[in-house]
Image 1 (cartoon, rainbow, N blue to C red):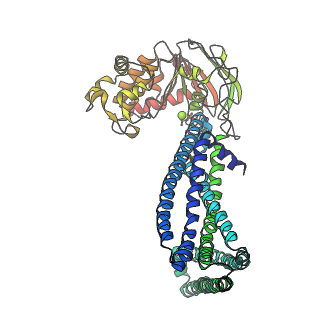
Image 2 (image 1 turned 45 degrees about the vertical axis):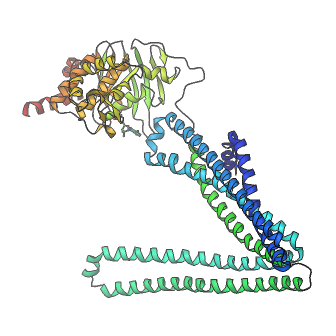
Length: 577
Ligand SMILES: Nc1ncnc2c1ncn2[C@@H]1O[C@H](COP(=O)(O)OP(=O)(O)OP(=O)(O)O)[C@@H](O)[C@H]1O
Ligand SMILES: [Mg+2]
């Protein structure tokens, strides 16, 4: 209920439109109600009294009533759909904004398809519930109340009699309905049992044969089959009984009403036309009742969708600007990681007690076995996740105290796998800085060793790149990512295995571009291939989330620890290869 009110709050901006729509609905429903009156006059005045003038009035009346009905019906469905579409767009937009702001931790735990379904399916279900079904409810309720009023107006005694008998038929249908539902469930369960048994015995056919248990299995299957038959027959019995019973009860009810109504006509208490009009209203009542209960059912389902959508909207944005967050001024690239521990979940921490300091322009390499925590540290710098313990400061300011945008604007990331957007090469590189000119983009592409291959593409820089950039190679994609980073011109760079997916030849080209990119910037480089980090100012060797060695390439070789082991293995492989 709370969520339904919240849903309705999305309609509030369109109050005027929706009130106009409701007016149209009531007028359209009202003209529906007028039809039995026409029938009444037709019978009582025209047919009984041969009143020609009345016939003309009635003919004009029919045309006018249906014209009005048509106009207001148009108004109703147009306005209602208008509000429905607006509301959907509003909720979708709000949900999408929320998704853009949710921390990566949320994305770790949820499947992309699930989130897409929230935005497309659930929101559409909401529109259905909130607008379409709400309108249907208003329409049907107006018709219901109108018909009811008319019936009492025409003949209150007959109305009371009707409302005494008709619910009895409804009650009978209810009882059958419940039994049918139960037997339906039973059929489903028996079917499931049988399928499970089939699956088991057929897939265990070797066991069955080796124990010569074919006859045993056949007997078991026959039993299940028989049980299935019984369940089906119970259902069929109920179904076959339902129609005649309901029809018979309905006939009884109609007989009572028709008898009493006919008696009143004979006695001259009401006219024949009034009786026919009364019966028409009574028949009309059946529709609203059916539709109202169906609309309630749909609304119930849609509320489940609303629960999901609002649950997402209410998620806390763990990683957001503090109220008093200040923009980070242009940095020189000084970074201090102070006793940082972090765990993705409540389990063992991914990194523990990490401390190091980086001076502007230095190149820091992280090496270590898979799962050691290298990417994790790279994730903490731009605050994709918040540290669990300790602190990270850039230029002396804690990353949690500055605005996210000012922090991330100054950090460039070249990831292992580059995602390209569908769009031209221009657009893809411009993603690095939206106001870059074409000349600047070409400059960046040249520096990234990408200009040459871009010019060879079918339409050069205007070539459209497909989904995920499938039509260019991994190395080319990587160079576009580097061009993006060059354009962004960040003071701090993170290269997470930027060349690991490449063959030696493309690696050389990409590496040359990266070397050029790193000049004058603080860079964090993660690499499995140690050849790419020999020139690092400092190498941090990670194992099980902790720094186990720390020094330059030469110092670490002399130490003869994990690093020199890794290096020797790769070096020997190179020699043999
Ligand atoms: N999004 C995540 N959610 C939960 N646990 C994660 C997540 N990412 C990484 N981990 C875990 O954290 C630990 C460190 O992972 P990390 O990705 O930092 O390793 P890595 O050193 O970069 O390894 P690789 O060389 O294979 O890339 C691993 O045990 C990993 O299972
Ligand atoms: Mg990694």
